[in-house]
Amino acid sequence: MEQLVTSDFKLGIIAGGQLGKMLALAASRWDIQTYILDSDASGPASTVCTCFVRGDYADFRTVYEFGQLVDMVTFEIEHVNIEAMQRLKREGKRIHPDPDVLAMIQDKGTQKQFLRRHSIPSPAFALYEHKEQILYAIDDGSLQIPFVQKARTAGYDGRGVVLVRCKSDLATLLDGPSLVEDLIDTEKELAVIVARNHQGHSACFPAVEMVFNADANLVEMLISPAQIDEDVERKATELARQIAEASGVCGVLAVEMFLDRSGDLWVNEIAPRPHNSGHHTIESAVTSQYEQHLRAIFNLPLGSTDLKQPAVMVNILGERGHKGRVKYQGLTESLSIPGAKIHIYGKRNTWPFRKMGHVTVLAPDMETARQRAIKIKRLIKVQSCQDPE
Ligand SMILES: Nc1ncnc2c1ncn2[C@@H]1O[C@H](COP(=O)(O)OP(=O)(O)OP(=O)(O)O)[C@@H](O)[C@H]1O
Ligand SMILES: [Mg+2]
Image (cartoon, rainbow, N blue to C red; front, side):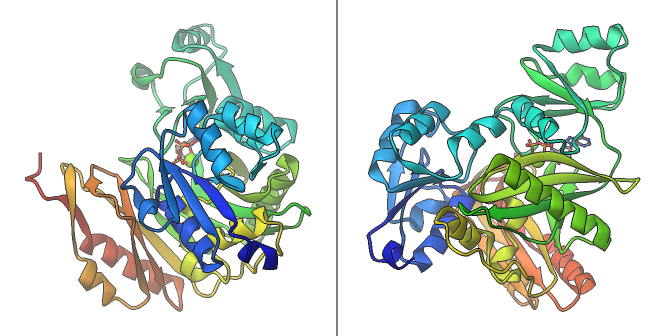
């Protein structure tokens, strides 16, 4: 680390959203220079990085040239041009997590095959080329409703995921290559963030519970620690550790899981980057997921993942019917609630359900944290300056 902080080290971060912003802020505490690549020059990370590079991270040339500017590349988003990352790696650029891990998870089909190969419990699945194949499979009895269909590539925040519970839902099937998997009768959705460094040391944050907004299929509330039995907690962190080991990842890796009504755990998906299920760690854990990511990619000792206090995080989402230049209400009042930590990402424009910020509430006990978070959720409104549509 001594050399790192005195060497004008340049860390390239691909994408400048809220995760990039929080990662750049953590890096700046160690005086590491951060270069951010994003096409939106006014995005969240643009105000906190050392150097902002405007460009499309899906484009080969842009990513390749960005890699030349920095000493190491990391990323906070998955839809990055993989050919450029692989070429940079071949030419000796340090890239963490490894582009091979990124390539594996970019396609949900290969990600599921990876989980199956390593005997990680995950909903049973089959791959399809187009939706007609799915309809034939239903007709010939080889596929039964209910199931979940997922686009193999380019899905995020629930886009690219279709829950088929009854025949009429078939009208919403996605075209193009997809996977179809068993619909899990979910009691809770959990996430575990694990970090692993080059020496193979790993550390897990305690599992969190993710509560979803059914309309937007977005996480509405995070509960840390998850309110689950010790046995489930142990299995969840063990699964995360196993995945980190099997993938050989360097950096943080988020593992989303379903806890079903029989008490079994199923891995939903994995993301080798800081994750929204770890926002609360900034205030509630001894080490934040962002600092932990830096420790892991620089092969430093991993930090303590102990929690300081129970925490509930609520997302600040754009309101339905509001689109355009953003205005907020209720922030000042929310600050009067004990333990409330407000994060505004700095996005200029809002639209329905856009993630504009979050609030983490710390309290001596979970019920108090939850009540205060619910109050804040009601207080804060994200609207546009124009009249609602
Ligand atoms: N097999 C399943 N059984 C039950 N519910 C599911 C299943 N797969 C997905 N879901 C529901 O859909 C949500 C989104 O699915 P998934 O996490 O695969 O998509 P995503 O677009 O990558 O989401 P995100 O970017 O928000 O993590 C899950 O969090 C869960 O609520
Ligand atoms: Mg998900």
